[in-house]
Length: 385
Image 1 (cartoon, rainbow, N blue to C red):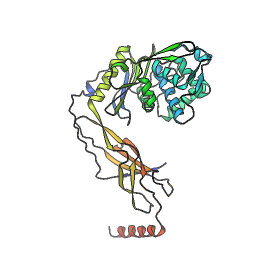
Image 2: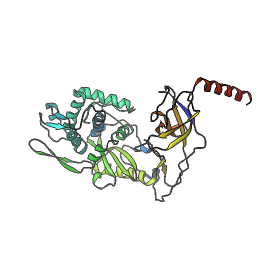
Image 3: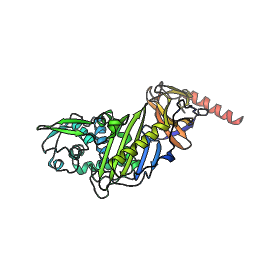
Image 4: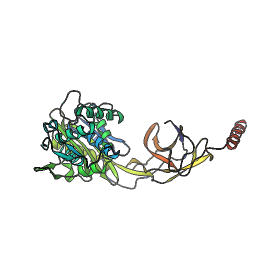
């Protein structure tokens, strides 16, 4: 759908900092991990990066993609968390981290997702992948299709578990992209905070133990995924929220579990210590005087479909312009509550964040008389300019 951008003059935002806090400059951060990135989850704004586009083996961080695709399938009504999945012999034979599922065992989608999120279980991942894709190879194709849709330009998956494989790689930047998507699901955040839990199997209880040590003692931590192989080193994609602001950090190829924890702490501490999230427009706010060509009214009003937020550095002003983009390939009438455009925060040519604008009332096409009068008026205005 094409859009036309209309810059609203006089709408520069100046929001002054109220909090006083001792902060650390980005230049003072020293990371031993080979690659890392820190982003704000809502907008995707990058707050810190170190070799973020280097292609590296992601180990079990790979499992974020099947976690995401399962939750998307639930959201679309294609599957349910209560659906039962029967473990295949191929899933039973998986190596690496697992909960030792036996072929023929039936578990729900929710139980498999818990085993993946908490314990990084390869057998559960394989079983869920077969269920989602029909076949395991079919699911790998689906994974890479989703990679392309998310704009993960430097990623290719050869499996869903992250076990070592030729041509299986990702980057910190790409991992942050799929992490932003998966943390939108409250179930993933809820399971990611569980330190330990028992999963009831037909013949025993399987212990699900969280491999993300920061869940126990980092305020606001709620996931997402650890990874570790000899080739990949120690990896961690982490999510934490404080005061309504969610940050996502990715650390790849650290030398130890302690190092990946320390690097993650350092990144998140930097983000929470130096940035504040501001709500520029609240959901339901009315946006007035929007020019809508061809409509019966020369200017229309819209409502914000959700909060429009942006980050600012502590002690600094938030100084972005607002732009309205209206849809061009529309058909009259546009009903009340229907999307009629977007509101965007921009910094030069960079879009910082955007939200949908919905019509406050029906927008109908101007009659022939109104169009003639407007055309004559435009001609007269042109003559006397």
